[in-house]
Length: 153
Image (cartoon, rainbow, N blue to C red; front, side, top):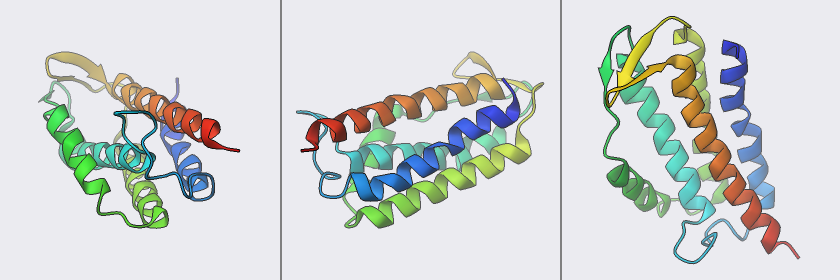
């Protein structure tokens, strides 16, 4: 997989998220299932991961770097709380897409195919690291798409 292709996969999230301004209106605060998050919370969760990668992880990626993920449960709880601050879908989508653009811009500059590093003892390259997050995006996109598809008249 080429650098461009990987970063493009992350960029593909942006037009999808922008389309939610139309397709999720009226449903963005509703849980996708009993005991699950709403699209608002899921999007904030993704945005928080983008910000964490940009601010806390990428600055430290270097050959043989030993990195750690943050406490995932605590990070997710903070995202759910932050989601409550968003009173409009438009503002949330604007912030989500801005964070994603910042992340992809930074990756486009920093990405290389030779740097090897570890995160919590697991070996990574930029490619394998980015793949985790493209799969994470896909999981949550599918959740939201399924939810919105079921809720349409």
